[in-house]
Length: 115
Image (cartoon, rainbow, N blue to C red):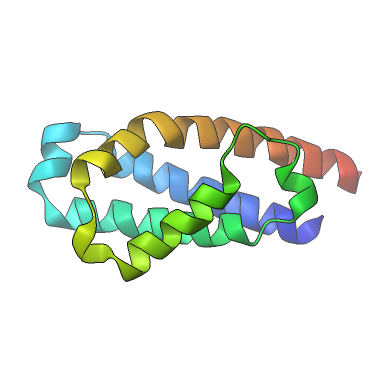
């Protein structure tokens, strides 16, 4: 589906930006609010795009917690004072790499469907 491809590519763009922002490590991330803000913004945009994916494409990656990603967007937008930067760092280290792999796989599925 064309819309899924757009959103998947958007998610992948956000993942790449997050990877760039955290490349200098945890200490750098924890020390600079501009880096923290950039990561948080990309997580928010990523979660918004994930919420717009079709159910059919999401079912190709059942190990990804799609509902939790959408719910996390609401935390980032509405509960920003309660955001724990240690948790955000952990997400960048464990969840983002898994999501990246899943999105790349999903893009392959979408491309196969389009051809």
